[in-house]
Length: 203
Image: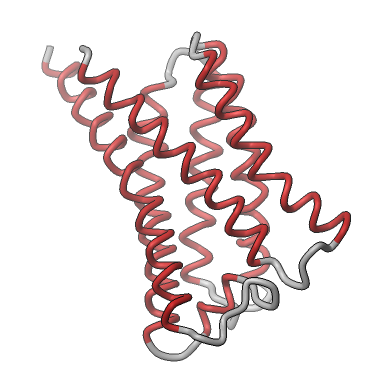
């Protein structure tokens, strides 16, 4: 009985981290943009904010690092236990956890750390939709059909801006595909965190 209560408590903690981490990331990105009037959605990458002197770089880098840590707890404590009924569930949660590590790494290794910054950024934007694709199958096998289709949609929205960018180069720089991909992942996390908490409250 104690172990079950402990598990439920850990899952609740993971779900709460899932609610918090997208808001930390997006709010810090937003504050960094507001603090740097020269930022352009067309001519900049979001990571350019990480090397602007003063509060801009601090808020941006701290936000991504903290969000990645919270996201790691969401994946390993919350999501991993919520989807523990098959190997593919564990793989999906693990890949998502890896994506959050790369997110924190973006905050640590800003553009001053070349080529490390490019590598960790690339790995984040590859592993995020990859994790969502795997989680689509995991949720479908779990019987969460509607949530599975929602996750599939999130994965396509996360990946499409990058595919279109490399095919058509529709914008001079990458801030737009970055934010679209980040928003898709954030909405997924918030929805599944709500589902996790709802499931725990029904126990």
